[in-house]
Image (tube, rainbow, N blue to C red; front, side, top):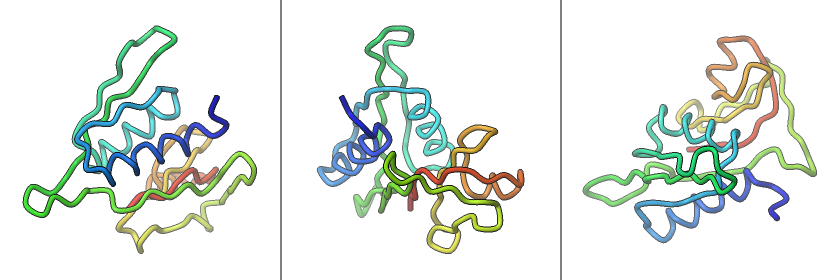
Amino acid sequence: MVSDPIADYLTRMRNAIAAKHRVVEIPASKQKKEITKILFEKGYILNYKFENEGTPKQSIKIALKYHPLTKQSAISDLKRVSSPGLRKYVSVSEMPRVLNGLGIAIVSTSKGLMTDKEARTLNVGGEVLCYIS
């Protein structure tokens, strides 16, 4: 059993990018599905597919995005901020900016998972899950 599923998700993505894989398969959860949707909306991944919906062995297949000429990944850095041992909560005024606005911070708020920019516009704070650039 994994004690930190979000860190496991990020590590699997990081390892797949380092090995230049096209597709990575990750065990699914509601939070991981929402993170995947955010990554797709912001253009960090090519596509995704939820497999075995409604069964205990659900998974997410993620097609990673690479530059066609340089073969460089769209995701350069994945960093876990809040962990089960040390939660990191921020208010709207303390909301972090990743790479001066070029990256995103995924924040778990009372209105669901969203990016730091969306949280600022909705004027809500929450737990900073990870930074993606």
